[in-house]
Length: 182
Image (cartoon, rainbow, N blue to C red; front, top):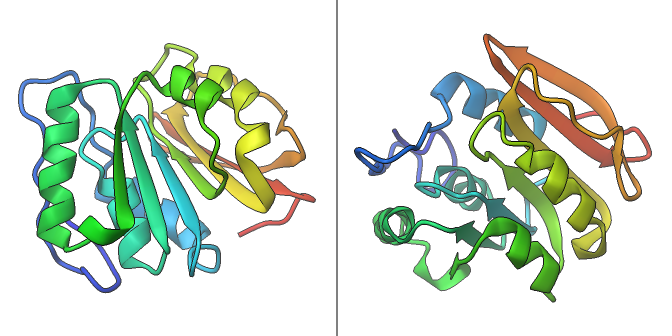
């Protein structure tokens, strides 16, 4: 696992071993960040269900201003903390040990980009979508990585679902305001 592009390009990241973690493949991550190519500069990013933190770190490497990494597993957060140090993003990263849905209920900050890669087939992206609208800036982008069979809502607050991308059994669903495409 590595950072694909940007200021930390090529940095190898650690991956949790023996945990019920399914890291985003390089192919899907490249597609995700191709979709976001014009949406990252200077943004506040939320990496929800962060696992190893690779999505938030990729966003920081590509110009995001800061990132919040949320995961309920302490071992995953320890790996994320190590990966943040490996990439040199300690000053622009915040780690939060919390259940993702509880975090969304209690959070007071807002975000420009939300990246969600929860465990598949548990309905967590749909559940998070209900709680996200109050945390989104106008013009925000939300990307949900799910199994192809998961059903997601048609919108998240003011954000529509303009495009779904499929990669084998993985689906990326992109929500933007006004039906904009990436």
